[in-house]
Amino acid sequence: MGSLKRGLPVKSVSAREAKYNFGKLIDTARAEPVVIEKHGRPVVVVVAVEEFERLTGQPMPERQPDQSEKKN
Image (cartoon, rainbow, N blue to C red; front, side, top):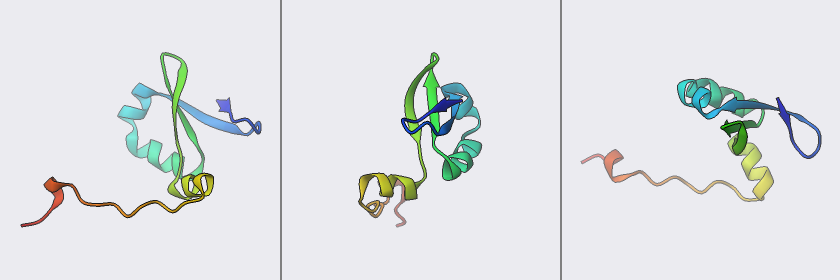
């Protein structure tokens, strides 16, 4: 387990574990930040939308559907 600047414990998982347990990653990230590591080095952090909005001070933009999602 890693830690953020403030010394709070953070869950860390390998990229492989994140890939094969994506649903669990999402569930965990909704409760606490999750550091994804590649070759033992942290590369990204997954956080809940609410935490992202708090950190950026801006609401998430409304999502636009992809061409493949549009109904005829």
